[in-house]
Structures are given as C-alpha cells and as structure tokens.
Image 1: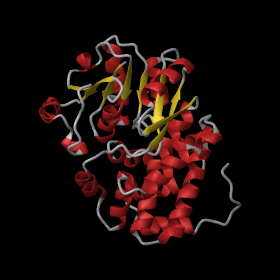
Image 2: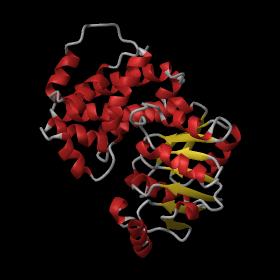
Image 3: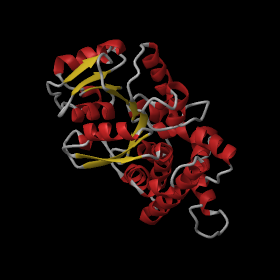
Length: 330
C-alpha cells in the first residue's frame, strides 16, 4: 500500500517510520526547509532525534505530490489546523479514507475531530481516529505500544487496522469514533491537572485521585456525546489518561509541572517546542460541557488557571473544598 502521513512532528514522524516497515509512505511537512533538512539527513532531528528513515519513506512539502496515488491518509496536524487540512485534501480532488491522530477540540467551534470530519467529508467517506497510550519516543525505538483505531466503515477498519498493525504496534479496532475522540481530547486537560498536583508535591494519593476523577469527567462528557461507556475503560480512555498523567514525555503534564513552579503560560509554551493540545482544549471543553449540562470540576479549574489567572494552589484547594458526594461516573 501507499500511505500519506500529514504532519512531521514527533508523532507523525514516528507513525510514518513505523508504517514504512511494511508499506510505501510519504511524510508531508508544511515547511520546505524542514523537508529539505529531513531529505539530507534521512531523519527528523528537529522533533525525533537521529532515528534514520528507511527506503520506503519519502518526504514532501507539496501536498498534491504527497497525496498522489495513496490508498489512505493519516493526518497528524494539530486540531486547530485539521479542518483546513481536510479542505485542502478536498480541493485537490482526493477522496481516499482519512485517519487522524490529532487530539483536542477545534478552537471557537468546540467541535471534536469526528464532527469536523463529518462536516467536511460527509458520512459516506471512510474516516476515523487513531488514539491511545503512545509516546513517539518509545514507538520509534520499537518498544511495545497498543492503540485504538475507531472507524465509521467496517471494511476500511479491517484494511487500515491490518496496515498499521505489526512489529511493536498492536492496533485494536472500534466503531466508537466519538468515544475515542473524546478520550484523546480530554486526557490532555487531566494531564495538566496531574502535572500541577505533582509540581506542588501533593503526592501519589492526589495524583491517583486526579486520574480517577478525571476519568469520571471524561466518561460523563463522552456519554453526553453518545459515546460508549466501555471505550473509557480501554486504551483510548484510561490507558491514554494514565500514560499522559504520569509519563516523562507528556507535554501536557510538563505544562502543569511548570505552572506549579510559578512560570507564566506564555513562557512555558515558548520553550516547550511541541504542541500541548490540552492548553487549547480546556477552554473549549468548558464551553461544550456547559451546553451539554455536564459537571466537569477538574476541567473547570484547569481552565481557570490557563485562561483566567487563577493560581494553581487555589484551583487545587477549591477542588478539595467541594461538597461531599456519592462516587459516580454518571
């Protein structure tokens, strides 16, 4: 098969390198200078160190050339640019299936990627979400990784699942595109909260409570979006949440750690070097949760810290000061 991977950040590059073990892959990057650099060294040192590309992997900055003759597309551009990417694909007359691996809600509209895909591609084109506990730095080293692939078309699910599965990557298929999208988006917000807790030295008990109650918020939000509850107990829910809240490579957890140390958000983002989707997702989730009537106290407090100047300590204290209640995921 020939597969285009759009977006040459760390995760896009790691996926392209993995897929190229079995298939022809074209990795697209927006900036010609970035592509020229990758061609020269046959690696992506800007985002993923000196891991070398194999002969099945080509790089391209011209989107039309990157999409020529492909069987399907894997989009790994940030969520804020996902709609524009789909529109660019349509403008080129390319109608192959699209999988996305970006996570978050679209700015302003507060729509999840599958809602954007439905609007731009329609219900009859095959599309879906790839998500789960997966750090690029580990996949590229061949370390065992498992992810969920949720697709709106059963035949394409089998085809894409088989194409991505293999080597150190296990791919489990699902039909719950909404659930996988919600899990991927909201776990980043919870990771910022976990980073704040860890940065303030609140301990393991607090981190475990944050993860568990964060999972409850994710599940409530997802069910309000017609997602399946079981999805949040799987790789795209609990799995991705645990990794992002505890792992050393988590950009969103790093944002929380640095906020707890007293740094300003603008300063943190300027030095991070990668996109931390949770920063932009929190505000949109709060808006969407209000529309849906879903109670999301952790998300609310993270948004207060990120967008309204609240101190991390006050946010944690306000969470602890909430009224006693019965434990529930509903």
